[in-house]
Image 1 (tube, rainbow, N blue to C red):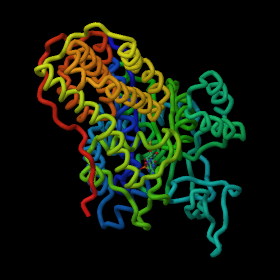
Image 2 (cartoon, protein in one colour):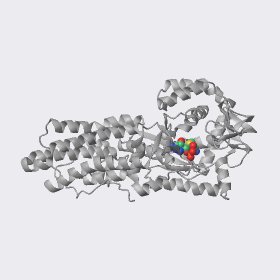
Image 3 (cartoon, rainbow, N blue to C red):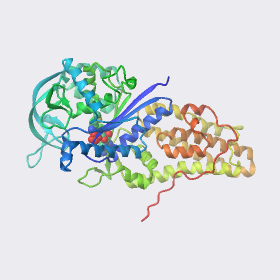
Image 4 (spheres, rainbow, N blue to C red):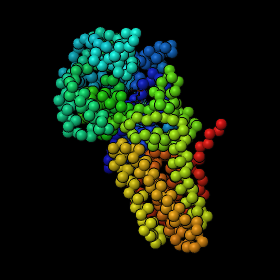
Length: 511
Ligand code: ME8
């Protein structure tokens, strides 16, 4: 029996096309999912689209379309993006699917039956853009008198009948939960923020709307549709077959191991969602990790500035794996990052083409030329050989721990340290001169390099699946030998390697 692991991305709003921010979360989640599979886990990886709510209704109206048709079109763009980015999702959920709607209504009913939902009236400062209310103390006033939310969105005074979720009664339970699960929220700074938010006092949460129709009807009261966040968060269990938890084979994946989200939605995931689940008597996910936000050449990405980076255009120009690598290598995961074309090109040329690409090329071309293209014997190793191999052999252990902390940038830096050490080793050992002086030693050096490259390529598969597939083929590693656990078994001496070819071309600006 394999251990199991469930990971999710946010489900993306279909009010606009996918951009590099969405691609970032999906790629990061994909790396984590692939790493867990590589390590022998049975992985359930969920992504999808969030299709209800006033923002979507309005975006559809602006385009003169029905909300359903518009949502279907934009959802297809998100799915296409996921496919083109090689995102290995298990299920792509849409919140307009019947199974999801039924699931939300069942969850609502369960919470209402338990006494945690009541009808009241809501009035307050509402932001259409953020789809939430703000307190007076959170607002600023613009020069023209408009009231502005901390996100920069305009707010308007709104009054409507509304169902409320009794969030206030969960305050102590949440605090207790946070105390008992110190790793529930990452990074640490986010956990502290959320803790002080809880301690400042939780108010009941308005969970229905009457001001628009594009949403899931509240059971027993068709005048109300569910607040889009109640609807959206439920995707994480509707995809597993909730409420049919006894008959659904997928329910074994609950509670999820990780909800990966952007930092702006951590409150929804780390407060409201656990409270809903506790109220329904369900288990709470194990961890919520929020990563930072990307800006573009120092500016916030926005349609009006015209600086939105489309992920598929990046891929077209630079190739998929270099883009995946760049996004995860460039900034510490959890912190904010800035996209700049030049830094992408630098990473591609320095770290992919020079550091890793050349190492592979230099090693494999010599095996081809000087060992008849066959894997040399392990032979008699000296201290230098053992030191490099010891570094490489340690990689899976180091990476496991880093991946479980979502420290993706650290994982890459760890691998790159071994790549740099391998380059220093090849320069120092100079197998090209050993060819003339000591053939036996040359064989040992080349074998050490091939074995080190095999470990490096195996560990990098989650980050750059296509490029590492190419490299592993060139290293003579069969499909059935690519799990972390396979690294304990040496590739037999004499295995024939195919002719090597470049894996990471240098990027040269054309004009
Ligand atoms: O919030 N930098 O959907 P959304 C980094 N439907 N990540 C970014 C980003 C940026 N500039 N822009 C977007 C929603 N993201 C809800 C979620 S979940 C139950 C419901 C990523 O389309 C990041 O993951 O606004 C962020 O949390 C998500 O896209 C927001 O996507």
